[in-house]
Length: 238
Image 1 (tube, rainbow, N blue to C red):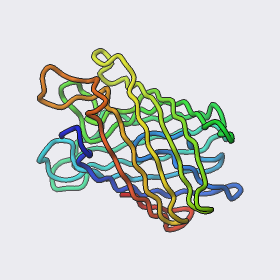
Image 2: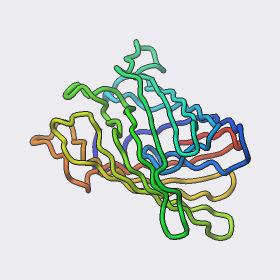
Image 3: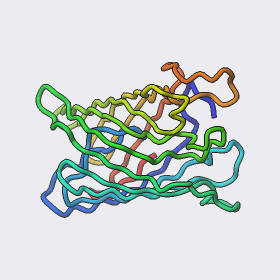
Image 4: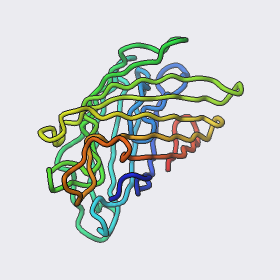
C-alpha cells in the first residue's frame, strides 16, 4: 500500500434505510470513509455492506464488512459492524479480531452561520490487520469530533463542507497526537452525488520506511466516491 496519492482501493457500499417517522432529508453520515456531523433521525436504521481489496498485497479475494446503525434519539446514533478479509474468494477468510462499535452524538445543530458538530467513538477499521502493531491497516477512527455545513446552490444542488479530528486508540503508544481530515460532498440531483475527502493520516505510515514517519500531512489518503440513490431507502456507492 502506497501513500501520497489516491488510496488504491474501491469500496462498494450498499445501504438500506428504513424511515419510520416524518419525511426528512437523510444526511450523509460519512464523506467517504471519514465521519460527518450527520445523523440518522430518531426511528431510522441503516444497513450497509462494504467490499474492498484485501489488505495484504497480492492476497486473493476481497474483504467485506457489514454494519447496522440506529437513530436511537434525535441526537444519538448507535451502531455495530463486523467483517474480515477473504470473505469473497477461494481462500479461508480471516475475520476481524473485534466487533466494531459506533456511538455518535450531535453536540450542536447547524445554524445560518455555524456548522453542526458531532462527537463520537468508532472502533471499526478495515483492510485487514497490520501484524506490526496488531491493528487495522486503515485504523479505526477512535474518538472523533466532526463539523458539517450545508448549502443550497443553483436552487437544487446541495453542497456539504466537512472537517474533523480523530484520535485512534490503535498504536496509541507510538502515535500520541490526533489525526485530521476534510472533505466535500455535492448532490448533483435527487439521485447522483459525488464526494471527496482528504485524510491527513497523521497516525499512519508507509510500510517498510524507516524511521517511521507518522506526522506528515502531505502523505495522507485522498478518497473519492460516487453515490447513486435508487430511492430514499437504497443507494450504491463506489
